[in-house]
Image 1 (cartoon, rainbow, N blue to C red):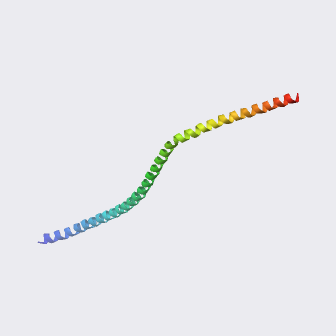
Image 2 (image 1 turned 90 degrees about the vertical axis):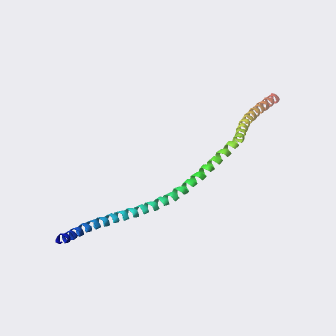
Length: 115
């Protein structure tokens, strides 16, 4: 029977070692869980932040598409403006030529009258 008492004493230190290991493992798991909770909170914050940024980008993209459509719709007017600019430039050239002709004609008339 004395052998049984020795077994009880031998089991007790082994149990202490296992309990110590279990406690260390529990602490490690607990720290890892806390780290994961912090990471989860960071991820949720980033998800919210980037979700808002994504929504803004979508709004900007929609605005740009609308501007592009408006620009395309206005192309005929731009073409008309360009054509008017070309016509106005030609008209200005003709007016300058007419003014030069008038000045020359006036000089010829003055020269004929004075001679």
